[in-house]
Image (cartoon, rainbow, N blue to C red; front, side, top):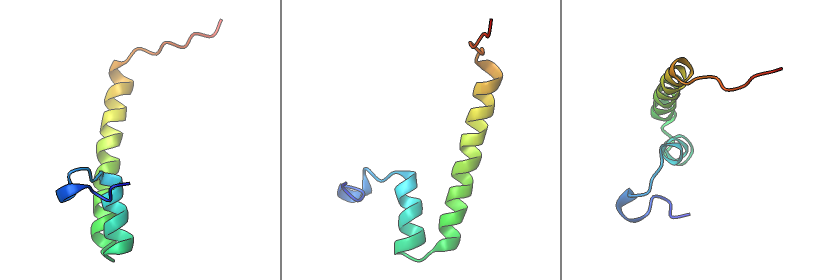
Length: 59
């Protein structure tokens, strides 16, 4: 909505990936940022799966 807001204060990582890849034409930088985002989310997911109790019980 704000395209980054004043001084890019509200820029999200997903919007930054889109902007760098499709608007600025920097596909390599965009894919590198997307890969880093994927690795961070994978790490958080693995930690969550390891330490959070599974609460689904089929009886």
